[in-house]
Image (cartoon, rainbow, N blue to C red; front, side):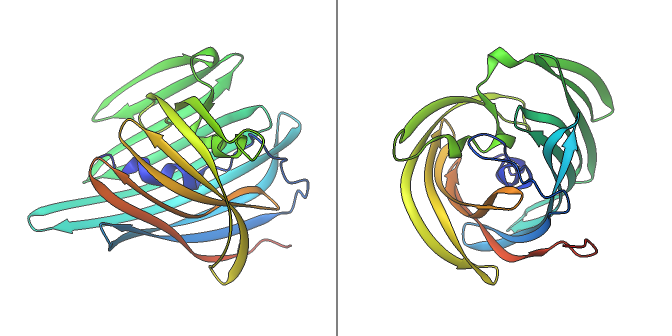
Length: 241
Protein backbone atom coordinates (compact mmCIF):
# COMPACT_ATOMS: atom_id res chain seq x y z
CA UNK A 1 0.00 0.00 0.00
CA UNK A 2 1.36 3.39 -1.01
CA UNK A 3 0.38 5.67 1.86
CA UNK A 4 1.87 8.77 0.26
CA UNK A 5 -0.70 8.43 -2.52
CA UNK A 6 -3.61 9.24 -0.21
CA UNK A 7 -2.77 12.83 0.64
CA UNK A 8 -1.83 14.05 -2.84
CA UNK A 9 -5.33 15.09 -3.90
CA UNK A 10 -5.51 17.33 -0.84
CA UNK A 11 -2.36 19.31 -1.27
CA UNK A 12 -2.90 20.46 -4.82
CA UNK A 13 -5.58 22.89 -5.88
CA UNK A 14 -6.67 22.23 -9.43
CA UNK A 15 -7.39 24.38 -12.44
CA UNK A 16 -9.39 21.94 -14.58
CA UNK A 17 -13.09 22.64 -14.84
CA UNK A 18 -13.08 25.77 -12.67
CA UNK A 19 -12.06 29.42 -12.54
CA UNK A 20 -9.08 30.44 -10.46
CA UNK A 21 -9.79 32.97 -7.73
CA UNK A 22 -9.31 36.55 -8.79
CA UNK A 23 -8.58 38.05 -5.37
CA UNK A 24 -4.81 38.23 -5.03
CA UNK A 25 -5.15 38.38 -1.24
CA UNK A 26 -7.27 35.22 -0.91
CA UNK A 27 -5.62 32.71 1.44
CA UNK A 28 -7.26 29.77 3.23
CA UNK A 29 -6.01 27.21 5.75
CA UNK A 30 -7.67 23.80 6.00
CA UNK A 31 -6.80 20.91 8.32
CA UNK A 32 -7.71 17.25 7.93
CA UNK A 33 -7.70 14.02 9.91
CA UNK A 34 -6.51 10.88 8.14
CA UNK A 35 -7.83 7.49 9.31
CA UNK A 36 -6.73 4.05 8.18
CA UNK A 37 -9.03 1.07 8.78
CA UNK A 38 -11.01 3.20 11.20
CA UNK A 39 -8.05 4.37 13.30
CA UNK A 40 -6.62 7.87 13.28
CA UNK A 41 -3.20 7.78 11.60
CA UNK A 42 -2.24 11.41 11.07
CA UNK A 43 -3.12 14.94 10.14
CA UNK A 44 -2.26 17.51 7.54
CA UNK A 45 -2.37 21.28 7.18
CA UNK A 46 -3.01 22.92 3.82
CA UNK A 47 -2.63 26.62 2.97
CA UNK A 48 -3.95 27.75 -0.42
CA UNK A 49 -3.58 31.25 -1.81
CA UNK A 50 -4.17 33.10 -5.03
CA UNK A 51 -1.01 34.21 -6.81
CA UNK A 52 0.32 34.62 -10.35
CA UNK A 53 2.58 32.46 -12.52
CA UNK A 54 4.11 33.98 -15.62
CA UNK A 55 1.75 36.92 -15.29
CA UNK A 56 -1.45 34.86 -15.21
CA UNK A 57 -3.72 33.98 -12.22
CA UNK A 58 -2.64 30.87 -10.35
CA UNK A 59 -3.12 29.06 -7.05
CA UNK A 60 -0.25 28.11 -4.73
CA UNK A 61 -0.83 25.30 -2.25
CA UNK A 62 1.53 24.49 0.61
CA UNK A 63 1.07 21.39 2.75
CA UNK A 64 2.59 19.75 5.79
CA UNK A 65 1.73 16.13 6.58
CA UNK A 66 2.46 13.94 9.59
CA UNK A 67 1.57 10.23 9.61
CA UNK A 68 2.27 7.70 12.37
CA UNK A 69 0.97 4.15 11.94
CA UNK A 70 1.33 1.26 14.39
CA UNK A 71 -0.05 -2.20 13.76
CA UNK A 72 1.25 -4.98 16.00
CA UNK A 73 4.92 -5.16 14.97
CA UNK A 74 4.47 -2.80 12.01
CA UNK A 75 5.66 0.80 12.39
CA UNK A 76 5.50 3.49 9.73
CA UNK A 77 6.15 7.23 9.77
CA UNK A 78 5.94 9.89 7.07
CA UNK A 79 6.54 13.64 7.26
CA UNK A 80 6.26 15.81 4.16
CA UNK A 81 6.19 19.42 3.04
CA UNK A 82 5.00 20.35 -0.45
CA UNK A 83 4.27 23.37 -2.61
CA UNK A 84 2.38 23.33 -5.90
CA UNK A 85 1.47 26.13 -8.30
CA UNK A 86 -1.32 25.69 -10.85
CA UNK A 87 -2.72 28.01 -13.50
CA UNK A 88 -5.57 27.52 -15.95
CA UNK A 89 -3.02 25.70 -18.16
CA UNK A 90 -2.41 23.10 -15.45
CA UNK A 91 0.58 22.37 -13.24
CA UNK A 92 3.26 25.06 -13.35
CA UNK A 93 5.56 23.71 -10.62
CA UNK A 94 5.65 21.24 -7.76
CA UNK A 95 8.25 20.71 -5.04
CA UNK A 96 8.18 18.15 -2.24
CA UNK A 97 10.42 16.96 0.57
CA UNK A 98 9.67 13.79 2.52
CA UNK A 99 11.11 11.81 5.41
CA UNK A 100 9.72 8.27 5.24
CA UNK A 101 10.81 5.94 8.04
CA UNK A 102 13.85 8.16 8.51
CA UNK A 103 14.83 8.19 4.82
CA UNK A 104 14.81 11.54 3.05
CA UNK A 105 13.77 12.27 -0.52
CA UNK A 106 12.86 15.31 -2.61
CA UNK A 107 11.47 16.17 -6.01
CA UNK A 108 11.19 19.32 -8.09
CA UNK A 109 8.84 19.48 -11.08
CA UNK A 110 8.61 22.36 -13.55
CA UNK A 111 6.62 22.80 -16.74
CA UNK A 112 8.89 23.44 -19.73
CA UNK A 113 6.96 23.95 -22.95
CA UNK A 114 5.08 20.75 -23.75
CA UNK A 115 6.64 18.56 -21.05
CA UNK A 116 7.33 18.33 -17.33
CA UNK A 117 10.94 18.29 -16.14
CA UNK A 118 11.47 16.18 -13.00
CA UNK A 119 14.56 16.47 -10.79
CA UNK A 120 14.66 14.01 -7.90
CA UNK A 121 16.79 12.79 -5.02
CA UNK A 122 16.08 9.55 -3.18
CA UNK A 123 18.16 7.05 -1.17
CA UNK A 124 21.37 8.89 -2.01
CA UNK A 125 20.68 8.88 -5.74
CA UNK A 126 19.68 11.86 -7.85
CA UNK A 127 18.69 12.40 -11.44
CA UNK A 128 16.37 14.03 -13.93
CA UNK A 129 13.58 12.87 -16.23
CA UNK A 130 10.83 14.31 -18.41
CA UNK A 131 7.23 13.40 -19.22
CA UNK A 132 5.57 14.63 -22.39
CA UNK A 133 2.23 16.39 -21.99
CA UNK A 134 0.70 14.15 -24.65
CA UNK A 135 1.25 11.09 -22.43
CA UNK A 136 -1.42 12.06 -19.87
CA UNK A 137 -4.75 13.90 -19.67
CA UNK A 138 -4.23 15.55 -16.26
CA UNK A 139 -2.02 15.38 -13.21
CA UNK A 140 -3.32 14.36 -9.79
CA UNK A 141 -2.92 18.06 -8.93
CA UNK A 142 -5.64 19.26 -11.25
CA UNK A 143 -8.78 17.77 -9.71
CA UNK A 144 -9.93 15.99 -12.89
CA UNK A 145 -13.04 14.97 -10.91
CA UNK A 146 -14.44 18.40 -11.69
CA UNK A 147 -14.46 17.68 -15.43
CA UNK A 148 -17.55 15.46 -14.97
CA UNK A 149 -21.07 16.63 -14.23
CA UNK A 150 -24.73 16.06 -15.09
CA UNK A 151 -24.08 16.69 -18.80
CA UNK A 152 -20.98 14.47 -18.91
CA UNK A 153 -21.30 12.09 -15.96
CA UNK A 154 -18.47 9.64 -16.67
CA UNK A 155 -14.92 9.79 -18.05
CA UNK A 156 -11.85 7.58 -18.10
CA UNK A 157 -8.64 9.60 -17.98
CA UNK A 158 -4.87 9.03 -17.93
CA UNK A 159 -3.86 10.69 -14.68
CA UNK A 160 -0.21 11.39 -13.83
CA UNK A 161 0.31 10.56 -10.14
CA UNK A 162 2.76 13.17 -8.81
CA UNK A 163 3.86 10.85 -6.01
CA UNK A 164 4.92 7.84 -8.09
CA UNK A 165 4.94 9.49 -11.55
CA UNK A 166 2.95 6.55 -12.86
CA UNK A 167 0.21 7.27 -15.38
CA UNK A 168 -2.92 5.64 -14.00
CA UNK A 169 -6.11 5.05 -16.01
CA UNK A 170 -8.88 6.28 -13.73
CA UNK A 171 -12.63 6.25 -14.26
CA UNK A 172 -14.46 9.12 -12.60
CA UNK A 173 -18.25 9.35 -12.28
CA UNK A 174 -20.44 12.27 -11.22
CA UNK A 175 -22.69 10.95 -8.41
CA UNK A 176 -24.78 13.96 -7.39
CA UNK A 177 -24.49 16.65 -4.71
CA UNK A 178 -24.57 16.79 -0.89
CA UNK A 179 -24.43 19.45 1.81
CA UNK A 180 -21.82 18.56 4.43
CA UNK A 181 -21.14 20.35 7.71
CA UNK A 182 -17.47 19.90 8.57
CA UNK A 183 -14.65 22.09 9.80
CA UNK A 184 -17.09 24.51 11.39
CA UNK A 185 -18.88 25.33 8.13
CA UNK A 186 -21.51 23.93 5.80
CA UNK A 187 -20.42 23.21 2.22
CA UNK A 188 -22.36 22.53 -0.98
CA UNK A 189 -20.40 19.59 -2.41
CA UNK A 190 -20.26 17.67 -5.64
CA UNK A 191 -19.93 13.92 -5.03
CA UNK A 192 -17.62 12.04 -7.43
CA UNK A 193 -16.74 8.34 -7.51
CA UNK A 194 -13.37 7.17 -8.79
CA UNK A 195 -11.90 3.79 -9.68
CA UNK A 196 -8.42 2.71 -10.78
CA UNK A 197 -6.39 -0.49 -10.79
CA UNK A 198 -5.51 -0.31 -7.09
CA UNK A 199 -8.80 0.74 -5.58
CA UNK A 200 -11.82 3.02 -5.56
CA UNK A 201 -13.53 5.68 -3.51
CA UNK A 202 -15.70 8.78 -3.26
CA UNK A 203 -14.66 12.42 -2.98
CA UNK A 204 -16.79 15.35 -1.86
CA UNK A 205 -15.52 18.61 -3.36
CA UNK A 206 -16.55 22.24 -2.90
CA UNK A 207 -15.40 25.51 -4.48
CA UNK A 208 -14.13 28.48 -2.50
CA UNK A 209 -12.31 31.71 -3.39
CA UNK A 210 -9.11 29.83 -4.27
CA UNK A 211 -10.74 27.02 -6.26
CA UNK A 212 -11.56 23.36 -5.54
CA UNK A 213 -11.51 22.25 -1.91
CA UNK A 214 -11.62 18.63 -0.76
CA UNK A 215 -14.14 18.29 2.06
CA UNK A 216 -14.11 14.53 2.55
CA UNK A 217 -12.79 11.38 0.92
CA UNK A 218 -13.50 7.71 1.63
CA UNK A 219 -11.93 4.82 -0.23
CA UNK A 220 -10.16 1.49 -0.44
CA UNK A 221 -6.70 0.86 -1.82
CA UNK A 222 -4.73 -2.39 -1.83
CA UNK A 223 -7.22 -3.89 0.62
CA UNK A 224 -7.10 -1.05 3.17
CA UNK A 225 -9.91 1.39 3.88
CA UNK A 226 -9.13 5.04 4.57
CA UNK A 227 -10.84 8.37 5.13
CA UNK A 228 -9.72 12.00 4.90
CA UNK A 229 -12.03 14.46 6.67
CA UNK A 230 -11.92 18.24 6.98
CA UNK A 231 -11.65 19.35 10.64
CA UNK A 232 -10.87 23.08 10.32
CA UNK A 233 -11.37 25.74 7.65
CA UNK A 234 -10.45 29.40 8.11
CA UNK A 235 -8.50 32.32 6.61
CA UNK A 236 -4.80 31.52 6.82
CA UNK A 237 -3.23 33.04 9.97
CA UNK A 238 -1.16 36.15 9.36
CA UNK A 239 -2.78 36.96 6.00
CA UNK A 240 -5.04 39.98 5.62
CA UNK A 241 -8.41 39.14 4.09
